[in-house]
Image 1 (cartoon, rainbow, N blue to C red):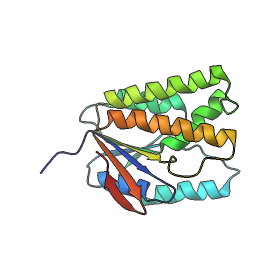
Image 2: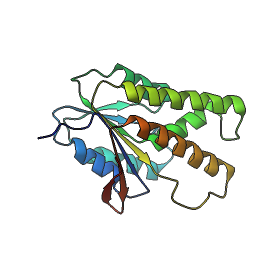
Image 3: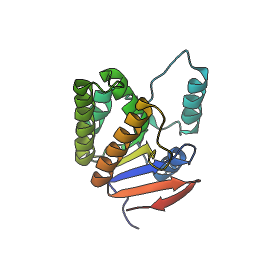
Image 4: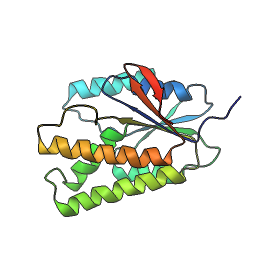
Length: 185
């Protein structure tokens, strides 16, 4: 029986099954910490329903860490212990959205973009140095049309760059297409 890869990146488009697949990769693990990157928005009932659907799929034995702030996720990865719980981070697109929001980077202010870049570099480094088994989930947004808005193009470009950085640091990279996992590495 082979050991699980230390770091796995699971990519996929909208409704590709990436989160459920990532959950299945760690379902048999004794201890799992689900690292949630989305931020609650009490004014958005549909978003609240989406979060509730994710929560309802998780085994009751899994711990949850809220890491919607950019530094929270980085700290969680940096402080994870070898032999500690497996970390399942879902997902990096919502984490990046929060980082762009917090920095005020949507209008492409150079100082704000440098702040986001620093967070992304720190996340990549924390991923490489994470001592625990780690499964990251992220959206693959580079296969579609070029977004019509500046903010859409900024998000697509920055997430593509982040995914590439993380893929370099992961032992295994999977792409979910129509619910089917394709092993890229």
